[in-house]
Image: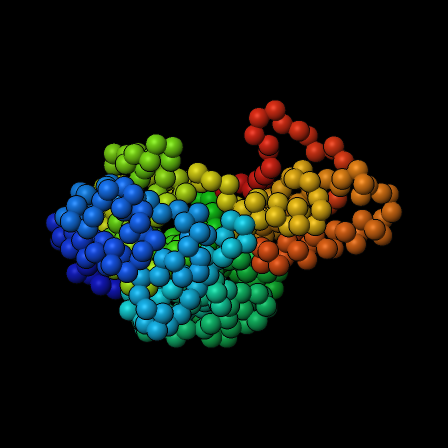
Length: 433
């Protein structure tokens, strides 16, 4: 039997959802106009005022926000309320090391946790469940979001955070955890380690997993499900919009339901920015219609996907988004961390290297690897192994500080990376996703 956390909203009629969106959008545009001078200026430049926005049919008139705006307005330029009303920030890395800092009032956190509670309930989760949160805690939104959702559902919550795999397994087995929340690659690694320890799917108490923060394939889903003996559910979110729980999979696993009472989704052409007809593939754009502290309007996610309103067997009426199949920018997601080639370039240039490099991403034993090959300049070039090792170490440390994850660095001879006539091939992604 399908479970819902807030059935009256999750299964509301299209008319009801539309009315909610109309009312909230009109109010939110006024809120942003009054409280966010940065966005008001964008509206003025486009010749739009709050009076022009009477319903969601007018959404197309509003200007977009992008990652670039977040960088320009950092840290407080997009704040929609007095700082004294904010109770938390969460953060993710930005394109050149300037972080995205998102603010939350208590009301924002309550709504976010409600969205995560819906995701947990959609897996069959109830207050009888033991939910192990193995996403990172701290500035990363994964741990705090699902933690709050688990509390709202009433699960016994195990906040293990990521890493320390054998301890994770001990808690799963000793406390009989039934729901696991983490990145798909970490779920695969946990499954592999449990197999090594002699646990088969029938020995493992888990029944469901909520896996997000990185791209994963249907093949990977089937492998995780077989190894852990669970049903694996996808979840989608962005720090800019709150975090995980913007959209989530139900039992049908035919796309992720977007929480439309909090977010309006559009698909636009990434080049012309024209809104595309329903069912078209394009760039996903979100408007957060009831966030107080960080009210994103028409935020370009850069994720390429499509939306469908076809009836879902689970009974939920909210629009579904397909798994994003790529991005309209050059961002990579490695072990759940956003990585931009421009961040890597910044570290190299700061250390005196030219921008001749190649990033090789792979997945080995279900874990993403990041290998950066960097050309030495003719002045640096040496066959002194000790000196090369020292230089590589400096770059490894610099990249860890910039990206928040460890990369392997290989220094290569000048002119040894193939030059391109057109756009440089900076990234080779060998992952099968």
